[in-house]
Length: 477
Length: 103
Image 1 (cartoon, rainbow over the protein chains, first blue to last red):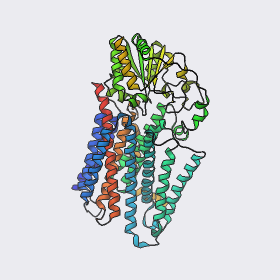
Image 2: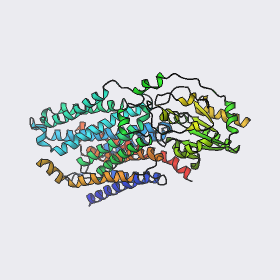
Image 3: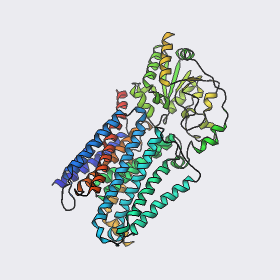
């Protein structure tokens, strides 16, 4: 009876995962979808704790350890997720993803240890005689994929918050291939080893997978981290599915494979939004090798600065103003000031809209979330195609901490690493005012010709402070 | 060869699930607008936290004197919970902001 209820729990969980994902991909139902999946997860977890029986019909024990672990994880997880700033959410997702990967790897390690313990006395019997090959592959795959996902996510996390710098060396792809090959070689070696001597090859599998995760993410530019995180996310899904296979657990299996498949598709969709292929992101070493190729070599032209009061005048007497938000806005937490500027300009009869590039900020949708936080009405956020149609009739474009998404090199410089990415054609507008903290290049590490064009003026400073001062100036007009 | 075929026969149910789920996963998010890419990724991230079930089983099966297995399981439970709870809470926080503007 109890086992039947557990089966039902897992069935419900699997359905909620599918429904949840489905609802998450629609703006109107997204939040509910997240809650649906969370409810299903709770049912599956509680069911497992109280109803699970192993093959011999024994219930689980060590309840104190289980609840202790869950309590610690839940408290830390909730606090971390609640406290994290909007700008740091992508990093947080990466970190949580790494935790999941590590969890999957630990499960494989524990299962391996369990087998080892059970056959400890068998001495020189090869491991392959004790464990069927399919089962072995699942354990090892869970360990390898989980470990790669763990170290990769940690590096991605470090890159997003600036603690880890891009790093690549000549022939790195070959080294990566060799490390990956070693992982596979030792997986085969471990399977052939006798039970007495299997520990070392098994450790080496883990070690090389650990190193591979680091090497895999290291050369990829910070701007591409969302894509990498999404990819690692689907890796963890597959690792979780391996666990589901080990325990013949359908909830883990469906949840894991579902995320593995959806995550892979999502990764490809993200690449498409940037008009690049996945291979290009992973192998291209965006922003590290390319930097020496173009940007740095080109000499900087002259740029023109504009004062706050001039900006205030230009903007208040415009008919139509477009605001292009970017990462700088997120860093400065200037979304509220931005909304205020919009309101004060509207009160002066200026039409204000926002042009949202799909990959502005550190993650797709970053800007929408940020501006929504400041209660900017939904209708004011225009997507790239619509905005590009309206730029020719726009008087002033105010760029707040965006760079690569307005870089004309994406259109006219085939040697640029971002060539081919669709951009916001802000140069079609009459005036362009760029707010940046300095002339430093953006995340892709390339110069932006837009800043040196005659219709562009630079307004240096922290986005929040500049906006507040600008609002003050406009009020005084 | 024989053993591989045997393995497929024994596990055919699971193999069916895997294949079907791959298609469901792709189908279900096929038309997501780019605005939702990040929350969707975050939500999917929370869902693969289902790996916690495995961690609970490992933990609950470990003999009380087997400290290595206990520690391994305990760590796995903490990490898995972090993934699940943190994942859902972060996703909810992201989407909370989407909901406001719908009104």
